[in-house]
Image (cartoon, rainbow, N blue to C red; front, top):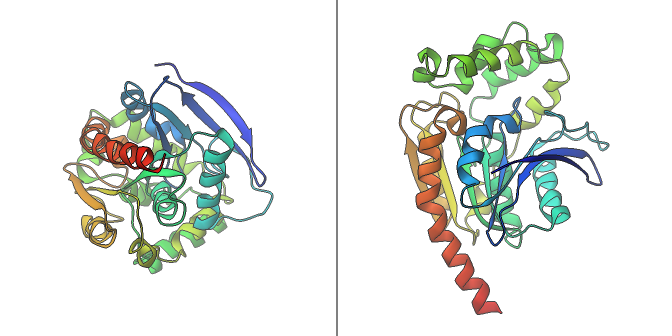
Length: 281
């Protein structure tokens, strides 16, 4: 399927997105990790587009999207944008899939806006407050003073699993992101701080009616599988899966395996949502 690039002006920010519309299908929205952009979903989006309409977007202050006019970079701002995007494009309810920072938005949508989401998948993510504030706070301070230069190798360890850090297969991907991390301006510190100094969403998930998938990379150096297991235990309709050989960027490191996990899970929750819709009608 062909993806079309576009922009949409929301009340607080202009977002860039790519869309592949397939008639008579449900929609999957993809939300990326901190410091990255929708390009991290290139392979996964192509696989999903065989069965679904797919939208992948750049978060505020990331990729081709603009800087926000409200000067907010906290995780609730990213959640607000996700909700506004779904409403503005009139595509809800959707299956919302987010990696890391995108997963923070996914879980907040599931807990707070069940009218907009059929399901939520949090990949390489967490519903807790940050458990490693000291280390990640140090990265934020470095970014604020110097930009990405000097912490690119630290960030590579955060964002990629052990296998990915040595694999010849994804060497071009690895080198691309290492250079991107190195070239980041000091302004990225605002988004990083919003992610690191976030509040927990776990208590809200106890009342969540939406099916939630927590998909962890077995080699995630940032958010290990027990954090995904906690999501699945807490959400009444929660499920946890673990991808072997993947780290924090599970959707990018193991796109085929991530697709297989989603493919096994999405039809079941889609059919539940469809039955529920018909019952209401």
